[in-house]
Amino acid sequence: MRLVALSLLLSVTTMVVIGIVMLFSTSAFSRDAFRVRKAKPKTEVVASADAAKTPVAEKDAAEKETADEAAPKKEIQWDPASLVKRQVMWLGIGLMVCIVATLVDYRFWQRTWPYWFGLAVVLLLTCFLFRDIKGSHRWIRLGSLTFQPSEIGKLAAITFLAAWLHRQEEHAREFFKGIVYPMCIVGILMGLIAPEVDLGTTAIIGCTALTMIFVGGAKLWQLLPFPCLGLAGIMGVAICIPNRLGRLMAFRDLEKFKDGAGNQQWNGLIALGSGGVDGLGLGNGRQKFMFLPEAHTDFIFPTIGEELGLVFTLLIVFCYVVMIISGIAIALNARERFGTLLGVGITTMLALQAALNIGVTTALLPNKGIPLPFISYGGSNLLFCMLGVGILLNIYRNGGLEKATRAVTKHRPLMTPRI
Image 1: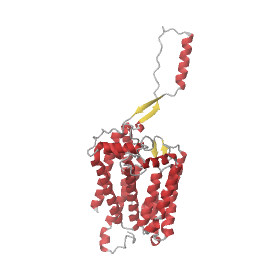
Image 2: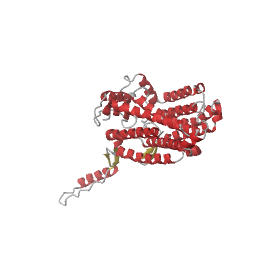
Image 3: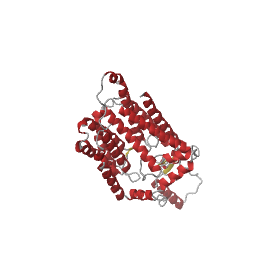
Image 4: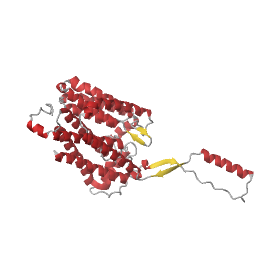
């Protein structure tokens, strides 16, 4: 089991390092690196005493001075390392959160899930009080920093489902208590996230919930109606929003819409093709020069392929596979049912997010605004990912601490018939 924990840490560390390096390469050319600030007042030039001061000249000077005072004085500042510094700051906070989560018993989340659920609902409602950013109400702005409450919604959904399925173990295969009731409660979060508009996170939370319910003991045929209903609901919302409808149309024929809704994915494919096997070299990518939008966030994967080549893109996929295997192994060796469900939920959430991002950036799925875990720029998502790693490590620690006890005492079965 120690090898499993080391593999988890090594894979996450590798992805975080690649993310910081690539962010340094791409973020300098992002629009977010440019800031509009108030210009500093200029030093007044005193006219010489010999200068002739006619009434007309004095009037023109007064009018010019009045116009200058009325006009807003702004200047554009460029800080190529601004996003890197912010990401490093969030990484430092994430490391502290990860350490704390590693030390705190994971059953803490079983006792406190109602607070996280309530906090998520309040913050998700608060999002609509702030002005939209790029057509979505996903963020809460605090000065120069922004935060996505949907990340707390992910944590709330996972902890609630793990606690519910742990408590309702005897009713796990019942259609209402084991499936309908928990899905309706998770649906509250999904119903608040979807109108933001964040259909990708809504789909991820829904799929994670179904996976946890299946692992908890539900039969597969009982779950079949929910993916169909979820897909129909997401399609219905997407059709009502012109921007999302355009993305769906572009997915059907990317070349036809390469100058419009499909521009991002089209340039992502160009980046991946340009890199080949060995890549163009770190810092030598061309698509990041305003050709590929969001090259440092949602579409950082094609940029990695362009600059570092197929070798590093496969390395990233391999790291995610190692992370998934390690997370599942830790979850299956938890000392109780709640730890198993919590570990499966966190691992599934991270795996689905990575799969959806890679699928979008390689044009295998319609375009969704989902960051690549541990790699893309974004503080709130990085914080949630590091918290998830910390919880997995705590599940591992608690499982290992009772190894001797399990060897001596016959342990109650950890799994439901499903696992």
